[in-house]
Length: 374
Image (tube, rainbow, N blue to C red; front, side, top):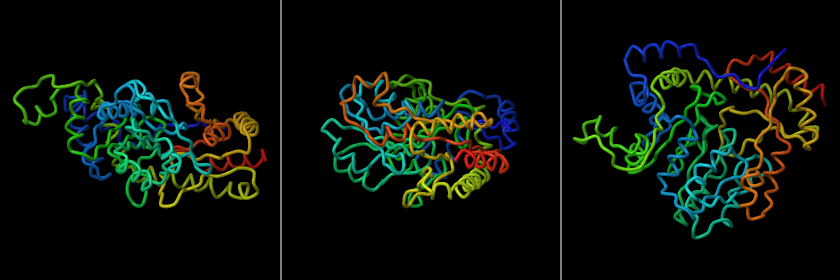
């Protein structure tokens, strides 16, 4: 048996939507299917607006521009995340202040944030790893008390909730990714979620290459002209057509993933009870989206041995992330603090295959292989 780590989700209606997009005569950004997806996301996630972007990284770039990040501003970010989370702000001259994560779940430690805040802190970026949110009330209170913007990097978390609200709707801005490794996908793609009308108006200008084209198309201005800074952040409408088919069938996708996640959890539970590894811990008030299933091994050596054992069985498991604060690029800039839990998670986490279309038989084979290893 050969089991990849990931396959992009296919619901069966993508080609039909793409053909319709071609028939409509507009395949570039901000067409019929862009509007369809954006309205769908805004209504479903209960945000003021959603703008489709070429990637989750592009949505983060837009968020950094909207916040007016300048050289010397400080941005607090968990060090256990993908490079895009930091790049968007570092590219604009911000000082990145990395925070540790929790020992039980690799999300930012809300209690550790207060000590990192300075008069120059402008943004806190919350990364919802595997659809799990940290203590959003505590983080929100810190942000309000210190006039700091909260941005949610919910790239992995479409469909996940905290206290009944969708992730991405708590902060001033939220980020989604529709990369092929995510729950829903259109090859590459993302979305910027906006909770403020003023941000939405400014974001449309950034999104449309610094022009007022979106307002002009709605008949709100007589001239289509350059009115600010921006770039080409729009997702093509043909990719939006693909995404629209996935949005319309998201419940089936989430259900299948959740069933597979539960099979992993139930089958491996006894080994975890015996102390061989930790299973994902779902924090209070969180409804996750089965975006990731991982185990946390007791040591890096054991993790690597299990990784190679599974690969020999034809199972592609993976690990991530490498700690950003000790990375070749950032380590000379770091303030020297040990981020103990970030480093521990990086050494010991192992992600197992989980995707729409993975069969129960394949999950059982993976679990049997892990049982055999131990």
